[in-house]
Amino acid sequence: MPATVPSETTPPPEVDAIADALAAFMLAEHTAGRSLTARALTARASARFVGCSALLGAARRDLALHAELAWPHWSAAQLAARIRKLPAFERLVTQSVLLTAAIEDITATLAHAADEKERGEHADWVAGLQARRARLQADLPRIWPVAATAGSDPPRVESGLQPLADLARRIEISEDELDAALRTSRTPHAFRLLVMRKQSGGLRVIEQPQDALRVLQRRVLREVLATADLHPAAHGFVRGRSALTHAALHSGRRLVLRLDIADFFTSITAGRVHSAFLRLGMPPRVATALTALCTSVQRAGALRAALRRHDAFASQTRIVGHVRDWQQTLCVPHLPQGAPTSPALANWIAYRLDRRLSGLAAAWDMRYSRYADDLTFSTDASDCNSLRFVDQVRTIVATEGWLLNERKTLVMPQSNRQRVTGIVVNQTMNLCRQDYDALKAAVHRHVNAPPDDAQRSQLLGRIAWLAQFRPERADRLLHKLRSAPR
Image 1 (cartoon, one colour):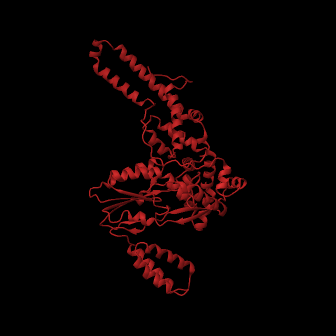
Image 2 (image 1 turned 180 degrees about the vertical axis):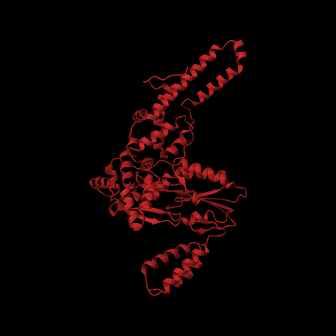
Image 3 (image 1 turned 90 degrees about the vertical axis):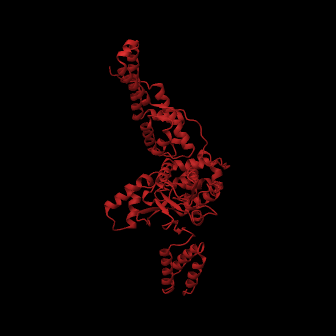
C-alpha cells in the first residue's frame, strides 16, 4: 500500500539535523569570507549535503530579503529555526517521510519472502525490490561527513581596533561624525552615478562617492586596508606591481589565455566585504561600520536618471532593459566601482580565487596573474587542451562567487597577436601598431591645434605609459609634443 503522511508530522531526526548542519555551514561560509550566492553555496555544499540543494537555494533566497549585515549575526539556532519555517524544508520533511515509509514497506515485503524456496521462485522479483530499495535509500536527504582540508583563506590580521571610538580615532574623525557618516552612507545622495560606454560596446556604471565619504574611504584605505597581505598573483592596484608587471609575466610564451570576470566589483556583496573586515581582525561592530562606509546600494530610479543623463534620446524600453540587468547587483548592498577602497577590498576578497587559480595553473605547467578582473594564463607547452582548462577555470570562478564574461575569453597562440592589458607580448613588450599610430596622430593634431592643457596632460600620460616598455618611441613623441606652442 502507498505510504501516507499525517497532516501534522514532526521532522524526522535526520532531516531536523540537516537544518542545524545547514545553518552552521552557512555561518561558517560567511565567517570564512566565501561567496554566499546560491550557485556557489550549492557547489560547495554538494560534497556534504545529499538531496538538499532545493532547501539550500530557498534558504539563500530567503536570507537575501534581509539585510546582508543582519543575518550573519544570528546564532546557528536562530538561523536553523528560520530554515525550518521555509516551505522547502516542509517539502524535504515530506520527501523524507515518504521515502522512509516506502523503504520500510519494501523491507517488510522482503522479510516475508525469507524462505529459500520462495526466493528461488521469485529471484528476479526479489532482486528488483532490493534494487528499488537501494535507489530510495540513495535519494534520502542526509549529511555526508567531510574530512577537514587545508584552508586557502588569506592569513588573518590583528587590527587592534576594539570599540567604534578606536575606529573614529584611526580615521581622524569624532564619534558623532562617524555616526553621521554611517547614517548618510546608505542615502541616495552618498554616490554620484556616471554611465560610461565600455570599449566592448556595453555600458558601465561608475559610483563616485561624495567628497566627505571619499575622504573617509581614503583614510580607511590608508589606515586599515594597508595591512592586507595580498596574493602574489594580484597585480592590479598593488604597490610595486602594475599592468606592466602583469604583462611581462607572459611575454614570449607559446600560448596565452585571457579571461575576464563579469561585474567583478559589483558582484561582491556587502556580506563578503563584512567577512573581509572580520579576517582583517575587526570586531563585528567595527566590521559592520566599515562595511557601511565602503559599500553602496542603488535604487532603480537613480539608475534610470543616470542613463537619461548619459543619453537623453534613449528609448524607455532600452532604459528599462539596462536597469533590469543592473538591478541584480546594484540594487543590493555591493562593492561600488569608483570608490577608493574597492580595489584593495576586491583584491583581498579574491585571495582564495588567486590561490586556487595559481594551484590550477601550476598543475597545468602555466603561469597565472590577475589584473583586477583580467585573468591571464600562459604556457610553453605545445599540447595544452585550452577548452578543458577554461572549463576548470570557469568552475573555480563560479564557486568563488563570480562569472566569466564568455565573450571576452581569448586563446592566443604565438602565431597571432598576443595582447595583455593593451600590451603586445609575443616576443618583447610593445604597443600594437594601430594604438601607436593613433597616439602619434593625436600628438600631431595637438601640435598643429590651439593650445589645450587638458589634452596635453592626457597625451603626456599616454607617452609616459609607452616609455615604460618602448622608451625610444616615447622620446620621439615627447620631443614632438614639446615643440607645440603652450
